[in-house]
Length: 99
Length: 135
Image (cartoon, rainbow over all chains, first blue to last red):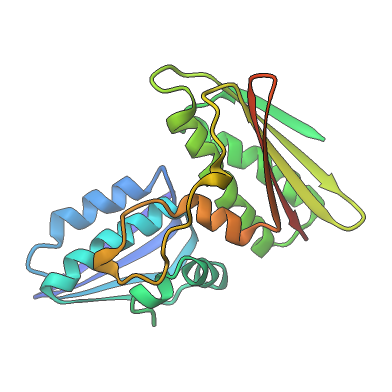
């Protein structure tokens, strides 16, 4: 289960995620981002309520980061301890801007 | 030791995780350990579902063995698909910047990093892959 809560204000978009970002739900996030990412200069992905991420989820974050490198900036905020650990072993802590 | 045998489809991923979580919760391993094991189980199971039998579908068996002294769990994945040893897969370069990183190839690496032990054998026509994690 993944809840995606998008909030767009001019060229800033906040996407709050709640639940699990895994093989089953990652395509939903990918599609949802694709829909709205055009023209966004500031993207915040708030994962405070995200409990779990697998490599399928990481792939979507990486793809979003690559898009945002061309058109603005992206921040991933409030990862929990387990997810922080996953970002660390995969080197994602150096690729993403985590706050 | 508990075991689950099912048709290895992506749709069955949630059933696999339910089964594993049930054993881990009964063993009281703590939520952090459980989450990292879940990530590993997802990566390994999804690999079987996606690649072991392509383009056919086949079965996978998952064994969960909770050890008492020292406290640990061993999870074994068995399939009879094409022989594949994930331990031979080269690790991705995790120091590359985003634009040079390939999308994908991280799954097995995450498993290697987060589990204490990973072993593979091809036996009687089966891929047998075991991960071990101490509680």
